Length: 389
Image 1 (cartoon, rainbow, N blue to C red):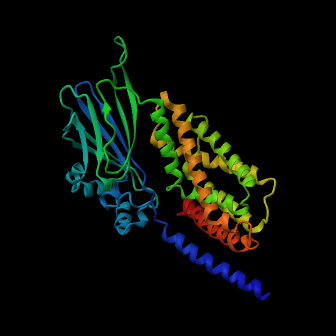
Image 2 (image 1 turned 90 degrees about the vertical axis):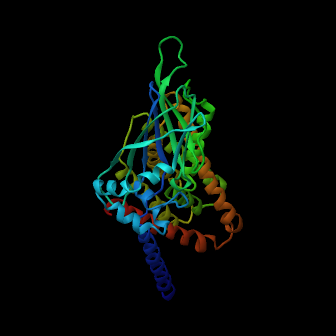
Image 3 (image 1 turned 120 degrees about the vertical axis):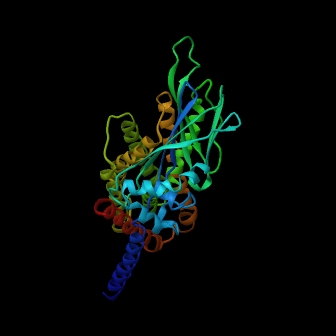
């Protein structure tokens, strides 16, 4: 009896500590890539829309952090997050020139002078969630411009660049507006040179590789909830056959909903999907604690949860945009990137834990149960946070 009480107390104290840790991250806001839309006009004018986390920019929180809570400027960020649209716009007014100096559009070796023509800030809403703001800029390209490159200061983070213009490569008079996904641009680095004189879409292989990178990045390092879910699958059984059944079930499920969501057949608001994803992590972790071996229903349950995670992946992919002509290629590439990320997580678990301790008699008592408890508490907090806070 005494041993049971001691075990309960250990679990209770650990849960409180972990809950406190989770509460400390309640204000966390994931730092995502900026979305850059460049629109080339016939008269040489270029219009630019930048969708970004304006509070993070003003608070000087860069891509070295996974989310804003990790920065020493998190307090300033949280204060900015509570400002109204008009108040935040006025604060940014004082930093417009500094922001313009931190971005660069180059056309045929010449810097293009840009000016900010508007700032659109969303309403305050839930201050525990990050909000997107849109900056509108304009400029004039040099006469006869052939190519452009885009670059943002390293402190502003990664960017997804999309270009819209007139495709002059069409034969005859049938030129048409064309959107080109120029890809992921790393913080502080220039984009690939974009041909605007003969605006032609990227090759399918290039798009394929770019979306593999985006899918992988969504898991490692940014997808902590998906990582914990996969770790939870690993903990119950380190046998390759068991993991293969579970991961295959999960992969099939999220591939189905990702494809259906991106084609518009199904949709679900993130306010519903995100709490359910957290609940799925809790379920897997709790089952690990009370079940000593893999039961025959586990792959079925994992499949159902995979459907939820696929909707979560779809919300991210829809933000990045997917050109219609490369829709299938981009979708497959993103999905492969997600799978590679998951396999990296499993490989890491095996190398750190499974290889050394997986067959030990104490593996369940000292690794599976404590680790599952930690995952359950963190995910339970996420569930509460995503619904009530």
